[in-house]
Length: 246
Image (spheres, helix red, strand yellow):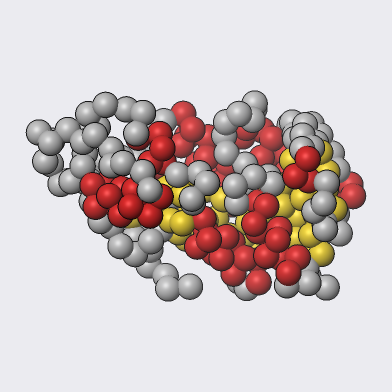
């Protein structure tokens, strides 16, 4: 039976666990605190305060480990990821999947793919690059680093945050988004098809302007459009593509 350990049972982790369970995988999830939503999950769960020195020997018999942890609010992020990766290596884990971000490319206007240079502009992006390197240094049999675009779904949508801000700039600039369903499909596809070391950008192929994207989403959600600064008509922005079809 296929087995997967999902470290981070949040926005992506929970639906990934459900997808794997529906496909008869043995699933174990990891999160910091138990909530009422966890009680009826048909999978094993661990509630662990992750740190650079924690150890979980009971994870050793899961062939695939998936790390779905953002840099915040986890303290000592890079050291904690390094600890997880080192344990994976010690336990003989066959396949590691790390959920990264397109923030590693920076925000400067340019066309990027998986061969583009990295240009982190935030502390979070620097930490993500360091975490990627921890994974690459481990030299596990199979490794997937998936760099996700802006994630969205009905219940967690960036539009709601934009509606709290006045006069938003960049209406004509392109977006680099990916729906949660597509992100979960990419994670599960990677888990099902280990094939050495792969780095992939996971973004939607279309890059409409922010105004176009959020106008469409506002209609779907029954919400008003953001308040754009109509004096900012500069269309130049970052576009993230992928060189791979699967």
